[in-house]
Length: 415
Picture 1: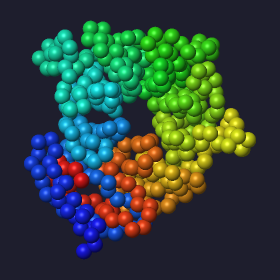
Picture 2: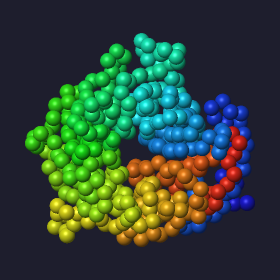
Picture 3: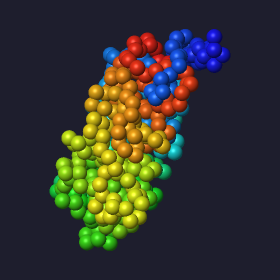
Picture 4: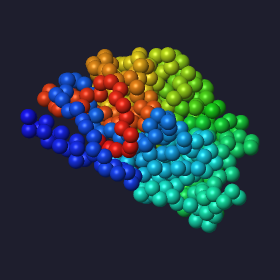
């Protein structure tokens, strides 16, 4: 037997350990010479309960992969190897739960009116002075408003849109203040804040459904832009999450445009005309912006086209648009990996936008956007099988092809 193949078989037996207090379980793998190009599993974890408690969403951070389940639990896995670290049960998660926010030493789950906090070991962190409520149930941080948007955070602060009696507001929370956690609120008169703010260093960018975009200091709420009213106004509402990095602030508007605004002035750096209302926010990677365009597909737009090129002016065009893509999944130096309308993984040539190869597996129901640039795709089946999938781009590799659905294991395990 090939020596390399034998080592992989032995590793498949000895690394099949149980997680979260499960008994060790042996499992079989089917390593084989891989087609080039194709997709193979880097790791896979089958969660207890399987299809009885379907996975509804997958999220990824620098350290963790989170699998949200319909019953309200969150399975937290090591991003590198898929090992199940702990299962969290945030309050109200079965009714509503936003993507997690990972701070320095804790994980925060925004639900309906609660900020539920766990440390990296899975220990629940109750409120410092009010560990229970009138129902004698523990909570981390209770709010007197409903959380409306996804949240962003850094250090000890958290920012999100919330529903107030008169109008929507952006809210800044200091997670270290047990009595009055609200550091400040920013009113958006007559409109709601449905899009997640964008956070860059000591500035937070906020947009409302009436199309107003603002930049304020994280600690003081002082306006940053010197525009009239300290506000940039689109011609339609903003409901997709904002994005920001050193190249600008990115705003997808229902007025059919994607705007790139200067971070310090709020003036338009450039704009992309999609032709249809944009309901989702963009995803930023090192050199590209990926924007879902309803009815058209995934548009890839250059951040910094060569100076003097026809696409370096105020009005930008997409480098390409992938018509069958319904979500961005990952990228590497040569390919963009997308979720197709048939729930498959497709590799798109980053230069031309032409499809190059596709997985034959079509039972993946949840994908986590991975903008890191390593090409790893994080996805899950409804039956509770969470996977990290990597592309096979060189001949001679051995592994397990991501080809067709397979039956999930009966207990939680990482491969």
